[in-house]
Image (cartoon, rainbow, N blue to C red; front, side, top):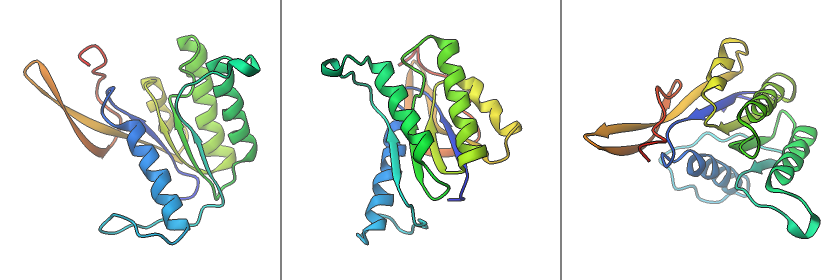
Amino acid sequence: PDEGMVQLITGPNMAGKSTYIRQVALLTLMAQMGSYLPAREAAIGIADRIFARVGASDELSRGQSTFMVEMTETARILNTATARSLVILDEIGRGTSTYDGLSLAWACAEQLASKIRAFTLFATHYFELTQLPEQIPALANVHLDAVEHGDGIAFMHAVQEGAANRSYGLQV
């Protein structure tokens, strides 16, 4: 993976976006410690740190909502990650209004690609973010494909270049 590359990963619910980014983080960790990788081949650079902002949970004992936990963890990543870090982000901004969430996700993607330059996998449902690669060359769109079969959907679990052409949220 190229240093400074941010991949925006789109696709339908249940297509495997979250699984894909977690798998990349786990394989990177395994490679860093010299472990066997279950792959035909892999080119994994050295990462100084692996940052992950995935899942949704609150911390009632500390009086923090799910959104507050998400923002605190995201701020920690943005303040600590370097150009040698791997960052995985899953659905940043989902815990607030659509426009606020989109704005937060957009700003995080811009910061990671333009200033921090960390290799980042950014799973999102905000299709508006797919416009960012037109403005920032270090951003790229990829998607997890799905194929319609009559009234059903077949998730291909394969990463493809480009943005997803539609969402299947209602069908899921």
